Length: 161
Image 1 (tube, rainbow, N blue to C red):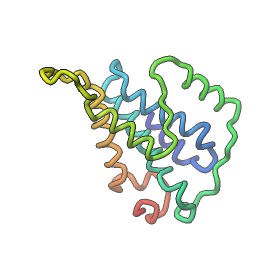
Image 2: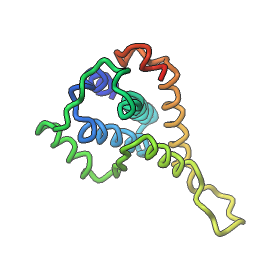
Image 3: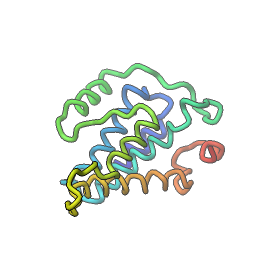
């Protein structure tokens, strides 16, 4: 997973964002939620997804910050096959998040307990999604703190924004 992260970040400008990177990012995010994954796999999935979110965070606002060219919009046959496999693979279900607001709303839905009609219910049946949401949010904020800025191969201005 770390290798995938490094390759995608290095080849960012040549990969189709909406059709490929977005699906890979969201698939890795959901793989981090899978209960059967060891913690190291969960952390690697979340770290890769957070890196992709950081890299695209300002793409829709400004292109003057990055030194890359415009990304392609079409996928290769191999990329299309991979996207189809990730979208139809069953578990985990990939929730597509197109914007930063989609991500923040999804994280909010994970971490906030659902409304309960029974005020005597003291058990928290939502602890796993809440813990997963909190762990991803922690990794996500850590990506924006600058400790991993060298891996993005971008000027300092990108990380300040």
